[in-house]
Image 1 (cartoon, helix red, strand yellow):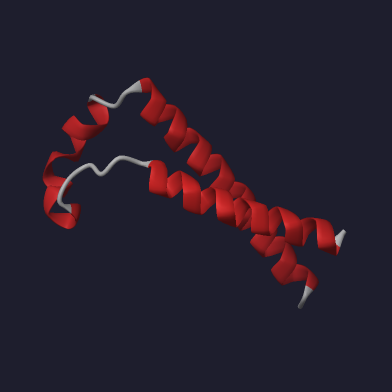
Image 2 (cartoon, rainbow, N blue to C red):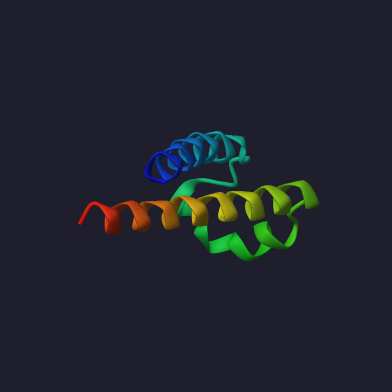
Amino acid sequence: MLTFIWSIQIITAILLIILILLHSPKGGGIAGMGGTGQVFASQKSAEKGLNKLTGIVAGVFLVCTFVLGYLFQ
């Protein structure tokens, strides 16, 4: 079971890196935070799906991290 969780952890880490790199840049970082309402209102459906998938993979990564932390306690 421990090997399975470790393999899921590694796969989700690689997927998370790839998914984050696939996101399109949306502005000037902290300087562009004033207009974030307009940016999110005009998102394409592909970008919304990518955001959803990134959130799911990040959630699986966090669950695996907590489970591994609990098992190695």
